[in-house]
Image 1 (cartoon, one colour):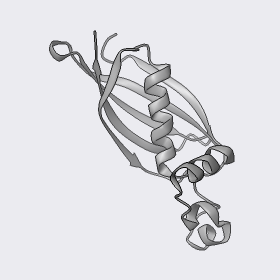
Image 2 (cartoon, one colour):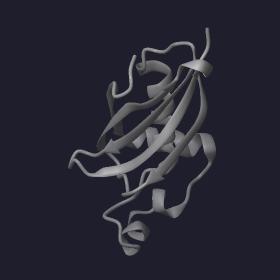
Image 3 (cartoon, helix red, strand yellow):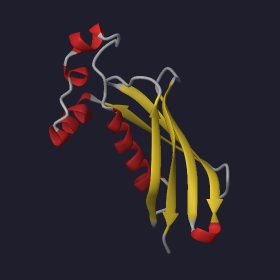
Image 4 (cartoon, helix red, strand yellow):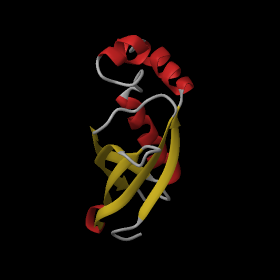
Length: 130
């Protein structure tokens, strides 16, 4: 583990994930449920909730990184472009800083869609437990 190490994982922002998110959190905003409304506001179709990307990030941290005894200290996300149903996303994360004295690793990350457009970016900080 060293500064500059990078990790990637792919996701699909499927209709099923959207429906389960809306069922669980009851966020049925018209941008996510009404194609005509979303198009009238300048989007090409209904949008995926931005917080679904947070779920993908949580899975990535907990299941894809090689650090199994880690807890999230903080995370920041900036949504830069809309994500649509069935977009194929790749999450890439890179170690930006390692603070060995306090067992903390800082990452920067971004999501790109199938068109290689960056749709979100941010940082997260993990505490490594012994």
